Image 1: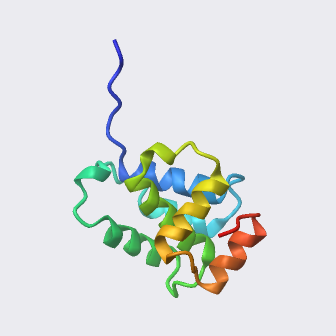
Image 2: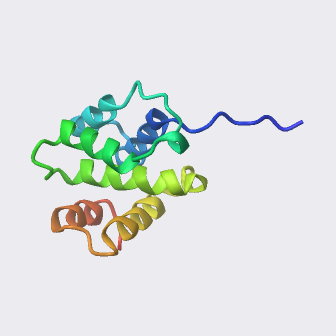
Length: 122
């Protein structure tokens, strides 16, 4: 008999997005972003305005909203919220698709530079 998986929580979603953006766990800004939602055990499917919740956490980690890693992690979290089947896909693939979805293929220059430095082409 197949085991039913518990619903994906906001904390799990953000943890996975940060892991995709920072697999070596070296970026303090992404760590701060993750901390903002580490105790949020609400299922993603029950959150009425996930974009707003992530934006508040993003601002908590990046007051000026100018850190490309945090901006990208937010985009990845939003993407994975709608495409949880992609959570275990190749990180470059997820980064590319999240950037396309969030910025319609035209991310801000700092994000584009950040992605390019990681070998991700939009």
